[in-house]
Length: 138
Image (cartoon, rainbow, N blue to C red; front, side):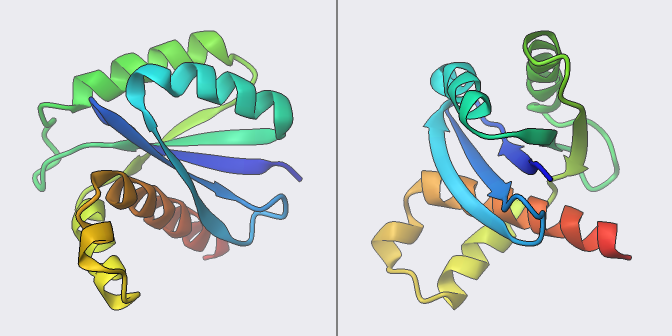
């Protein structure tokens, strides 16, 4: 089997999470400056077999678009053009940053590490990926 990668796309930074090859465990991968994301993904996809790209879709609680929704949709178009053989699926990213911050506190992460936005982005991507894997089991 191949991995699933999850992207928490942002204007400045993007958090990435990935499954193991058996798609059992979701793990934080890294945070990349968004301007370096496409080169990073190209290199990663040469090294690892990926069968699905998940990307968090920002929505308000009432399902309306946020200020970032169009930015994510534009990036999905670029991804589709660059990697046409890899399916892309959006996942709900509402509240994942808040959940990530809470999870980092519960893990006992030091305050200075919790304040690094890149850490929040990675954990948020991991939470989205875990939720996706959990929904596949049901």
